[in-house]
Figure 1: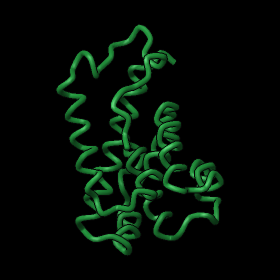
Figure 2: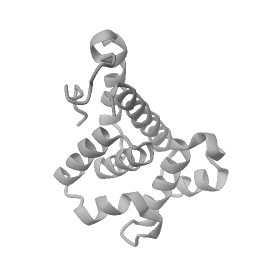
Figure 3: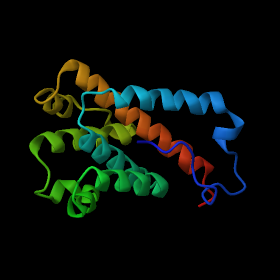
Figure 4: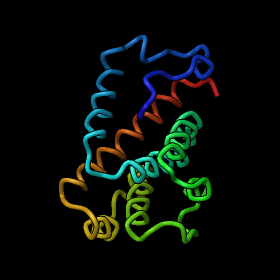
Length: 153
């Protein structure tokens, strides 16, 4: 689902990692291929991608993953609520556990991933799936950092 290039409008007077280091960029797509085989539902993956992108303020990724979420049938109301999910009744307990994990992993320097939040995810996911969620969070945060670093905004 991940676009293979950033738009030219986004990259202004900055290095284009995809062009300057194609091997590194392709390695990121290797992570995306791995995530495509994940047992984590596609709609939940997109909610994670949107949430991390909102926290990181990566407008390009917010737009791309919002579009992907709409194509998956996630309501516009729910997508809008991702930015303030804690105050929304639209998210299941399972989704809330994952969004809490996403918040902690995206802001890892604040408190790490506290055990109570990790344990809330254990209620819904296998060890294999938790590893997939960790990789999903790590990957979208890496994409956000690449995108923001290449952006002139």
